[in-house]
Image (cartoon, rainbow, N blue to C red; front, side):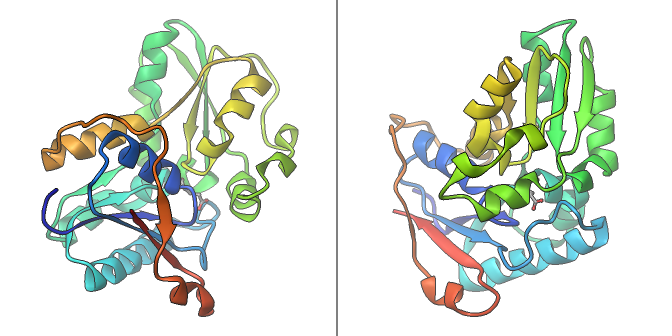
Length: 244
Ligand code: DGL
């Protein structure tokens, strides 16, 4: 285990899907999670505001924990401001992006649905990613309100009516460009009747490569427990989690 913490950040609960993937593949690393629940969702906000909120969250994490790296476990914040953040903080910062390339490799010539937040879809970084995806046609769709629905119903996901959020049409693959959507991966796959891809595994492996962490035996389930519950009682409701 390296010195210091790996700090994971998302607008809310979505990044826990990435934290879980990382802890399952690389157990034993010291991690801390900050979800900015007080300001979630970010998907309806402008780039400047997303940058301001994400920067403030990273400052909070870095003030309390010696960070050896930070993970922006949020496609929206990655798209909006990862370069600006990298220029400001002294530790490596890893982001998450829609797994369009892996999807394109599996369904060459196919129609690929990209689901992401309205704010992410408005970012030049996502536009460039779509433009540079070769060999498939990419259909972009931003289900306004889906991340908020997940945030609100994280302990009762079956209540979410996916038909309100998914587009009509037939697709050969779908790519989840929001870490909140990963909790609905199976349901999205069966509703669309196609394989579904997300960036979590690729990001977990990329983070490990950046930090030179070797894969150990993947655990079936990562144990994640909240630690600074005092934060949750305050009005800004942000919660820190630490992998145990
Ligand atoms: N989980 C975030 C993402 O991956 C954003 C959800 C939101 O706050 O709108 O984009």
